[in-house]
Length: 499
Image 1 (cartoon, one colour):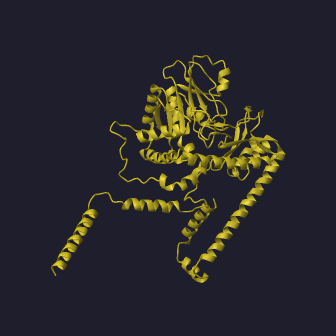
Image 2 (cartoon, rainbow, N blue to C red):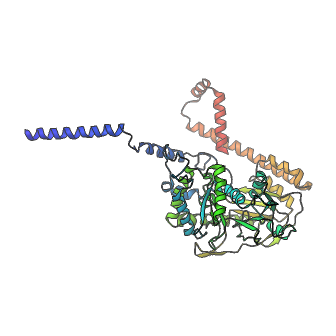
Image 3 (cartoon, helix red, strand yellow):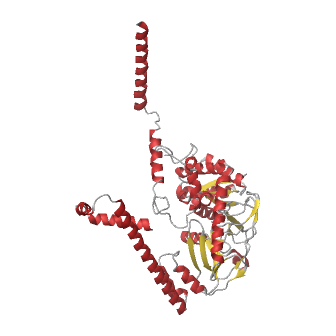
């Protein structure tokens, strides 16, 4: 009997302890993992939403580097970031007022050592809101402020238009954009005293070729844009060892929307001027962005880059095989692969570009510049000789350039058809080209209308099969609702699905 009483007392004590612990746990401020569970569930629910057939809940703009999206889907767990509402609320990372994550800087140095595409020893690392902001910061840092004449900014053609656009938009008092570096080298203004800043893009945007500086001398400063210098786009032939080297997360991992880039800077004075520019313009890069980038790059360096760079290179290689096959069957267009000069007189530079998940097809009518074959080179990362797989393909016209340009402008891959007719009055005086263009446009318009009609019929069929109410009851129910708002919602839904 006593034994049973002892067991009952022990059970009662244990039960009371469990209840007390439960009450104290739920009423305390101790971290509770329930919110992370809810956040993770919400994130997975959003990721599972399908829209327009591509598995995303919104339509990404053309030209986004989505070719790496399948890789990140395969690495969803390792790359995910769940952040609490009270996390990273401060302006700074540390008590010293730093805007830079020391751990992220360490991972970036490790990334370059793994890939072998840049020297990081004795370099300052600085973060920016994408490489675009870093271009502005580095140009500011290298331009002279108290010189008798403004510094000049040049870049070898074809060059990235942002170099020119930024300079003109900011309207620097101490800087002027002069265009082609080779033209400046030959000009009378090249007096070996004026400060000249040359931006060297390698691999180049838009033609994907490895570039070297055109200018040299004590008055020359250079900025090397290495945004595309990663194994999925180009052979890694040597580690970049320059005064200022710029890199972008967009081209490295495909996360264009995170707006993150970094620079490797040799000179401390240049680094301090860049840092001051970034501090005054944006107070550094978002702490939340840095947290996400840290998690992404940990995945990249975790296996020495094997996963992402092999996946990226194989994907780009397959796409180049497809695009080469398509152009090999064309009598009107060819890819720019052989050395030649195009001399096409016209009023202005014209470029038609179609982008599809980071392969851009450009129809380019240059004033006159040489093109040359891009030969395979040995890649130190893959340890083999390999082809270049740039993100952009440039096509040269094999027949009337004006006609080819108009046809591309009005093809289904071009911007809206209304833009086609805006080019008619300026692009060509050839009446036959106009007639062919109008005929093609009409055919495309009819095809578009037929496609929309087919789509509406499919929706009607789907609704008739899946709707569970009989016709008379359906009419009665909908007559009691605000049909105008329902119709507008349906139209918006249908348009989003179709687009």
